[in-house]
Image 1 (cartoon, one colour):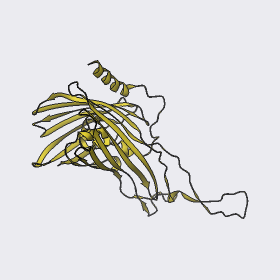
Image 2: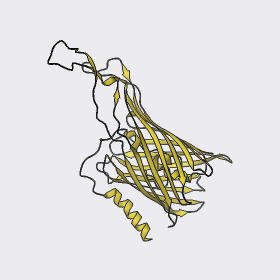
Image 3: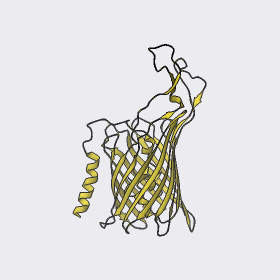
Image 4: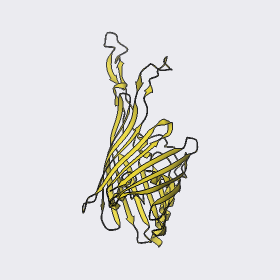
Length: 338
């Protein structure tokens, strides 16, 4: 029991460590990678690294993929802040004796916008597009009946008009079911990869490379140099377990400590109540506790399990996410198990 207490204290301390020396907010690229995937995880306050038992484990903790017994297709769509669309699509398939293989796509989309310049503040009549997406390939494997590991390799792209930035990253995770009342311990590192730098035709300019002397070419093609930015690296460590675990009623709790490279440390906490053999579920949680100038508040959610036939189930999940100053977010997820 001493080991369990030490493990729990470690998770708590990871969220309240004094990390306020330097304000690192806004110093990374591809921040859409920090938007949580799946209504179930968000409904539990984003505390999912030690639970991670559906196809969204490819996002939260690839080590959780080893728990999957059936193939899953999951689709999550959110109308994010400022009319931005966020979509997560994932497919995971256990391979007998060879682990679990998965594929996922994350896309952040927005409507076309008008080009505005100095002197044409109301628009030039032209439009441009902007967005971000990531495509990932995941694999999870059980090393023992209690311990699983996994990884996700992904290609990332962000674009605006005729310029874009690309990068490669990897997520690595583990999930361990302890012998202490089935309490689970999970840990993951997300978005470990190369820096991203925007490049493209929008950065092409005409430059006089020797303005002091006359007679040289005043229209040499040149590109504006842009900075290279780190990806939003996230270290998650968490615990989860059941207070009550019967076919008629199950009460699950979860807590995550998160250390980002572009903000202060914080905690996510959540719970889930499941009744009538998982027919219906209710969830709640708190996000970004102890984060400096955190914007996220509490979350709520629920779900229904709808049997299609003997070998197929459809789960519908909803989550509500509250913010301090920004408008509230609604997430809808459909999960097909077959």
